Image (cartoon, rainbow, N blue to C red; front, side, top):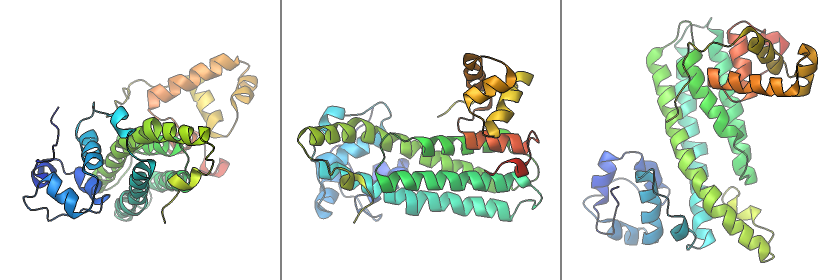
Length: 293
């Protein structure tokens, strides 16, 4: 693994690792880096160089996660970075995906009903992520699951006439956000949660304000089609029935329902109910009138 050091020339690293651009921006650092070292830039922008380097090296090296070192930093340093990241998601990456998606819909066949369903799935993701950010939720991964489903649907299940170049742009922007969320959530899970636990033990209960809003996935083979029984289960899931209700309706055991759900998810590459609803509607298994996405 290649690591940045205080003497590393930041512009040289960024030029071959462009995904670092929004990361350094979260520290208030803008492009126009010149030939300055990480140490010089950290001093100019009044940043904690150890924390700055730790975050950058985490992004550069997928297998590198200095959990022990990160826990040595003050909690406000970690939470401030997380808040800035959250705001970048809302005002940067979500806006970028939405722009590409709107352009895709506007330049594609207006009769392609799948695109409107995809828009609704994106809105569901956007609302879930903003809710998570605004409420400081640490355990809710609904938003990330919805985003992964959006990516898989575009790659595996979209059909009809549509603008392929803009579809690629949506996929790339979604994938960029998914990668960033994965790294971001590691810090939340392994650093922020233990810090919050320590605060709670110390009798500090107002931790919510600290994390509130500020002042490669391998897809299953398409040939693995779902069975007739799995299709029955899938349609009932999309119509809103609970597992026990599905078991009673089909006269099968609860464990069998759970097994079918697991197989459906593996075969379609779709994890959320919203994604499964989209799949059923777009394939004509249920009508849009039967349920609202």
